[in-house]
Amino acid sequence: MGLKFFDSVSVSTSEIAHLGTTDSVLLSKLGRQATLPSSIHFNCRRGLVPRAQWSGTSDHKYLADNVAAKTSSHNINGAAFNLYFRNTGVLDALDDQYGGVVVNSDGLPDNPSAFAYILRLSLSHWKRMGKKGIWLKLPLEKSDLVPIAVKEGFQYHHAEPGHLMLTYWIPEGPCMLPANASHQVGVGGFVINDNNEVLVVQEKHCSPATLGLWKIPTGFILEAEEIYTGAVREVKEETGIDTEFIEVIAFRHAHNVAFQKSDLFFICMLRPLSSNIIIDGVEIEAAKWMPLVEFVEQPQIQEDSMFKKIIDICIARMGKRYCGLSPHHMISRFDGKSSSLYYNVTDTHPDVNCIAN
Image (cartoon, rainbow, N blue to C red; front, side, top):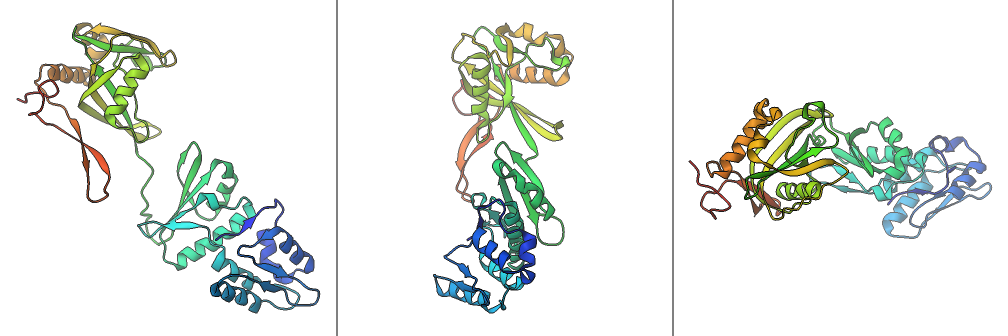
């Protein structure tokens, strides 16, 4: 249950803090501009104690009595106002399985002053409850609330196109919340046809080191996308060629690649299902079927030990002198979720797998 402020000039935090010294004008302003939940109304009569009216459960009645009991004539005591919000003004949130809290971003106040006040009350409440990590997702349309959360001690965790995630660690000692994703995942598709020709591309935007290089189609895995699905998709998008996934041949692990993130790059062997090339004019300058010998003899490949090793592995796989990794769908009893476990099997269909030495 939260407090909703709907007016851009609604009662400010400083006004709330000094309600004990204000006159009926401020009390009237509070009544006009702050909408309280569960049919609460503060009635201010000239010369009388402001009276809380409540319709609801016995718990609600208890809270209303506490509010009324903490007031004095001609003013509302600041402590009493805080008591009300401490019980009913905590941000809507769900407990996670690690003793933390995930705030419901749909229930956040629009008014920055209201958000600042309720956030402080919520943090005090969660501390008393022994909570640990607080997760606060702020949508793009509420980006003006970011400085307020940072001022209260929240830190950036990660950003997505539509939101920014912030966190707050309550216990003393090092923060135990998981860090932001540390890796990006890429795929490359090694596609070779029955004529011993490799599907290769030249990119429109490339580094000086790869200028003029004919390379295999590559790209990044999408969110919630399998490695093998991403490899097939990237080849299709860049060249128009339909393919069938065979195996993960090898993968490279590099660090400090982009914005200090690490990089996992999976080389996948694919079988072509079509031959007519239709390039993606946005990313790709040219694409073609290139004889394997010509592809291997490119100076950039011959002079680079890793590129050369990758090609050697692919050639060995074609001769069934090397076994790659195939995905096997499995469900773990720990989380009940389906996963792809990549491992080698040598006793399946001979067209799919190989005979290991």
